[in-house]
Image (cartoon, rainbow, N blue to C red; front, side, top):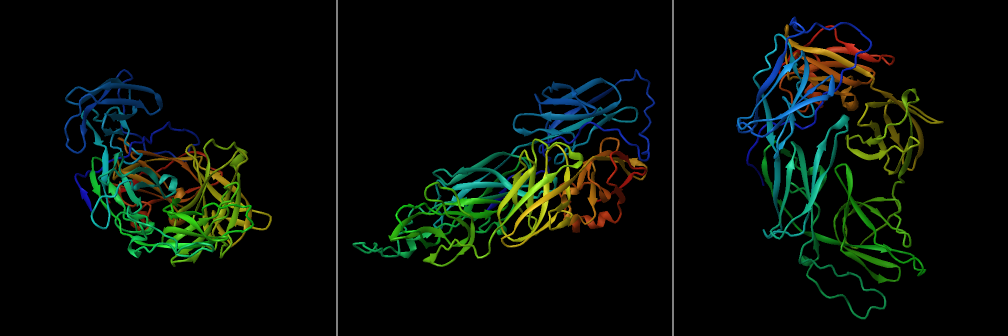
Length: 559
């Protein structure tokens, strides 16, 4: 069961502020509030750093102040026992205020996810009584329990987390460990997010005798009760044995959650594998893998025994859908995988694929023939928006996807330094507009993938009437958002209501500003629909670059 010890909204410790780029002027934004102070006027940023859950001051915390125009210009201090901080003699400008303390998640002022509100100094801005909130790190623990209610030791516990970077919508591994003698596990120092748990283990009492009498054997296998010839399927919180049925565990800062996982045995399959009988090849165990969210995880069988010349029996495998790969006996190299639904005892492991897998080689064509980033990846998402393949682009600008099932995929690009999108793909025989790719069974495709980069910065103000609003979520929503999640851009408005949306790719958009929208499913088209109809339309042309200044403020909407 899942028990919540404490809960509080929290923010992810990544700062989303950077240097502004002032380039092509495409319309003038409404002016900032009056800053008619003399050049000699000085300002201060001061306040208290507190525990966001208890509201108590945090002594001996480190508070830093960065100039957003020059992040290398930083000053810092250690707070007194009352948590007070103060930075004086500041010029008019925009600053990022950040705090850190052992046992807490580092955060910037009013931070939500990777976004925060910059502090603006100048006439008309009250910056002397700020509250900087830090949230304690979270903890997730629990027990792995068998069908009798006893603890399961040495169970492999896997932790996964939702990752929404650049619209990728992946569920990736966040940690792993083994249960102790009491069946307990623990993952500490967790940031907020949606997490998933899976457990793989073996029943301590299980035995798996072969079910066939091999040629030349002198005696039959010993009689074993069928109740002992069992296995535990990979089990997720809360009881599902398939990743699609796993229950997410929402974790917020400071949470101490307990999630117990109960394992129930199922009959273990006995699988028959035929191998060449020339005596020269030898034998290697087949490799079993199961799709777990956006990756393949290995599933360990009990072993294999020879039951006749050229015939092996693989035991200890629970029923389910697997990707099965044979190994070359001498080299150990894995052969092409086969998707198999293993449901029957003494089922033959026929690894000849019922539908041949495809191979797709993608050659990246950079805009303006610019060099490839050092960290550069291509990903394929299926029709369910699951990332089924994720490959680095090599020095030649290529990525090859092997053993790809037939289907429809979206080609996505990921780089931590710059935003890109696929505008078209082509080969000698086909021209594809957009990033969608249809793969037929057994196809061998070699495609050139043409990219467009985000070289436009959109700047503006979020206001309610004539009043700037700080701390609201500003989202740039692409046309047909369900098919173009990678084109979304977001920011959080600063003290003066200003926002900056960087790396915008050419296309048709609507800008919305929504108050108190952090934490809701902002990427779901159904959720955004009612806000988009009251948003501000914007078109970014293919030849545009530099900064686009919105002539009108974006009206802030209530959540």
